[in-house]
Length: 418
Image 1 (tube, one colour):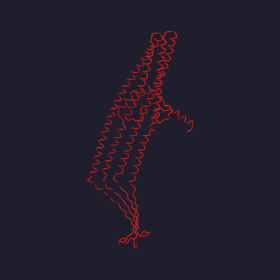
Image 2 (cartoon, helix red, strand yellow):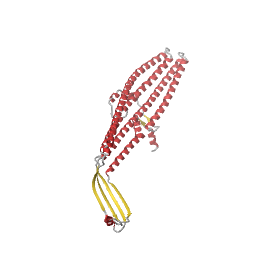
Image 3 (tube, helix red, strand yellow):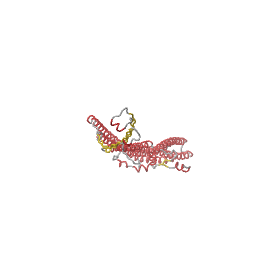
């Protein structure tokens, strides 16, 4: 990568969606979760080897002090005995056990997929919340800058009035004090902005030099205003879906227990060479055939019954946990929806408050320039406008955070503020 490419990389601007995509793509927990799928797929591949023939071979060399008649016919006059055996065993039919074992492993992949969904949704919400916290500080910085400019303009007015003897030096001092206070607040907001921005970039795994896209908070709020009412229906939350997959896995395990004492249908082949000298091909022998084997259940199937009982208990336990998880989610969704409605009302109230504060400030400025108003009333009115402007912007951002939380609680896989 040359210098120009590096410069282009550093000048890239990251939107909220891009930050979320970067965080998910580079998150180590997501990578580890994907590796679990690879491990399970390897286990599934190994199950395919159950149908491969099992070949065994062995050889032995021995010496007999005397030979029985049947051995004498095979070995001749020598007392040495060389034996080579090769056998092959092939499972012909397992009554569906291999298929059930594969389905059980695929259920692990499905469970892992739901966990991965939950990880991604959590990452998306955390990045969204962190991004909106940064936007809060951007709003504070903008409002403090505007307030400082207004106060400096007011200071010029006071200085002019002071020159013509309409106000005292005290008005100038009080205005300068207020400017100093707001400059201090601005410095604190910038420091907090730098910290939160650093945290956001770290969580998103992006370079510290890249730029983060600002959003028009009022436009974003207007876009999502009342949209939360469309999310009232519970979607397929990964926490709930994972219980479904675990229950299905337990049922597959029961089917495997039922086939634990199944008959085993197989074929086999065996060859052997035995002689007292080499070569010994004349004593070559072989045997081929098919067979069926059945293992009688120990204790009249007691172990099978115990295993079935255990899985039934596990299924009941999972069903109860699923119900509790659903109940908790429904409670959180109801609570979050109430908070969203409250924030929406608060935003509307803040608009009215700011309008009144702006009007009060304008009237106070007119009266002050006419020598009929105290500087303290001007400064108080300006402080109210500043603080209410901050409250107004932050209330809209809090509303957006709650909307993102609501979509997270409902298991939405899309971006929280889409």
